[in-house]
Image 1: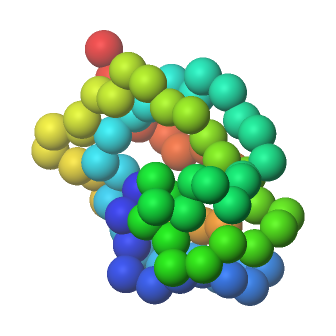
Image 2: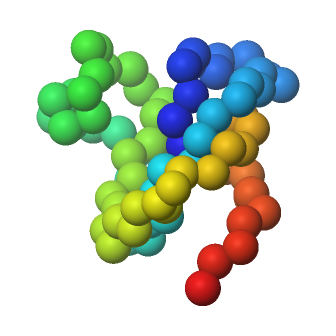
Length: 78
């Protein structure tokens, strides 16, 4: 999902595009040693790190509504 703004409040949504499908290998609490890998500028407790694999680009990308948290989108695929 790509969108222009950081969605920080409950109910925040905006137009975005789905650019890839990925497999989630594992999820763990985000660590202080992962700031660079996350392209973050600082560390804060309470976030999660997702290890992804098998990245499959969606070409062309599809327009979808960007939302907070985890949610499903409808799309046709082979």
